[in-house]
Length: 638
Image 1 (cartoon, rainbow, N blue to C red):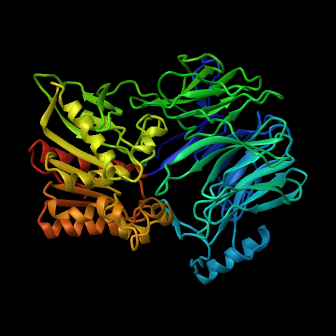
Image 2 (tube, rainbow, N blue to C red):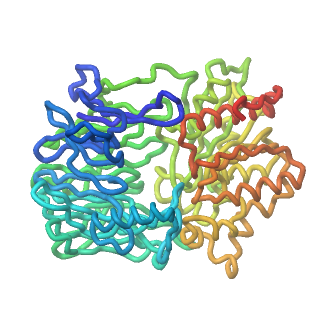
Image 3 (cartoon, rainbow, N blue to C red):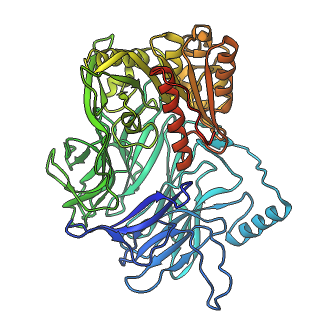
């Protein structure tokens, strides 16, 4: 078994990946793959067992001259011998997937508008570089997504075979996500074409002939989007995740569906499953004629593995932890994957493919974390509608009734998300190491609590979800080992919005940290890559103002008194920089103590390890100052 392992580079300013070999039996220690170098990632096995992977490693020509371009290419690693590059593309390859039983690989790589093949694309790129032009002309879609600008290059699907040139199967759209699949016999390739500005909530599944690139089938449904495609072993059916995002009148819903490629019929595979098959890709049995599949889904602070049998029966295979990156053995009897939890970084595990609520077998892997500075427990409460609520609570090592710990409340982003897995953004353990308890609440709109959790929070961004957080905070502070007089509130993205709601709704907290957060919901409509999504939820602000008036925190700015730290990335396309600037100007105008930590090169999340460290240092020093009464310590690098 091969895993891609990411670590911090020697300079401490970036990440590097290498390939590791993990013994499926768990007997031997994990080890670096022989001849793997820094920059190798995305491993997969071809039909003949050859290890394939992506890498930006350079290939020196036979004469030993200067190495050529270091764009990400597709490489093959034989059991013995050096790796060889088998596919390259100007600007690099974004992703690939292999046919299970055929010599066929689907690649995702870019083309510029007006270029029909790799050669004309390469020439167009060179012309732009010589002219020093990096402009893009947009016609149907947004200019950015999440943390990156889009275009002008557009992702396309290519099919590669060893006996001929690559076949172009079609465009994935400017916001394409490299979501592709190949039928086991290599005859078909499927991919998603991204939604456009004209139909912002509807994408298209395209099934094309892998030999010619001609379209065989397309699937779409107004108001729905499809993700994470997978073919059945006989290639007759395509299984994928279907999402209907929240609107003004309907809640968000996610399920698995199957498309019959002959009839075009779409079947909901989980009509009675109350949670969501989220966020990973369903894994289908590789055994011909076996319709069994496995998927993950949030459930009350965990993300278990579930099995779906031929008759639709759903069996939960794990009782705790959050699972991802599932794969199944060729006989369909054993699963492998990654398991993490709030108190456990990802580890490689083995599962029986049928046993309910089992404990995983942990396999040896690189650099496992041995200890944490505290303990993990749960807090329970009731919402104002009687709905049962829960949260994770991290307690520092010395918390006791004699020495109650200060508490930081940190709701998750999303809002369709859950605290279930290990995270590098707002990880609670640096706070615990500094002596803080951390409450990680799952309020209304969280995943893993059934569809009712979506219904009770629909259209109430700053209403019931915020009240749920406060109810859980009150329940936690009833404990003798927590200090109700020393509390803070912090959040990122939607969690940051709830932090802003706390800033305008109460003065009970000593300090508030608002990161990548919405402030002015009406202004957000024109400054986000998801303007159509938010417009569906809140309505047109010119004609339907009720939810803006109820939930836009900037309207209550005059109530703010609590010292605040704002954190924001300059390349954030999800919540634009203007939201942070508006909040900052209001705080300054009102005379509320405020500091603004700005990362010009970061997007909606902070990714660089050096920036993550400086963020934690700044946040913790800010909390120490306002919650514990210590002298303010400005980080040395700031």
